[in-house]
Amino acid sequence: MIGTGGFIGASLRYTISSRVPKIQNIPAGTLTVNLLGSIVLALLTFSSEPESVVYLVNIGMLGSFTTFSTFAYETFRLLEDGQNISFFLNIFLNVMLCLLGVSIAYLALML
Image (cartoon, rainbow, N blue to C red):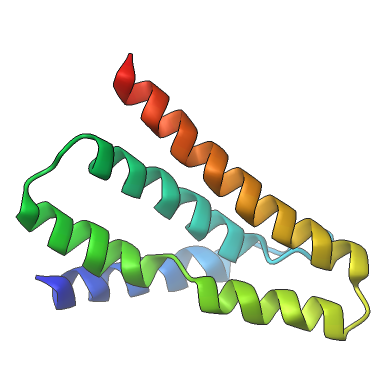
């Protein structure tokens, strides 16, 4: 199940991140998949889905869909290229928007 979810997640990540253009040097594709993944993970986790769903979706699909390593690499490249504002903005947007997405998902389920 984890492998199947991983295949689906990696395919979706490639499709989405390759189609979302950079915005002001910010790798918006990576930001998009991390934000979507954070929201879906929160929705599934806070809704107490069965263990089989957790393995397939949370671990398999979302584990390969979201990407901290690409975020770290792309952020480092911004710093290396002297894009200091984009460097800090990318960190801020990834962290804050993903936390906001989790918070909104949590609140939506608690209503």
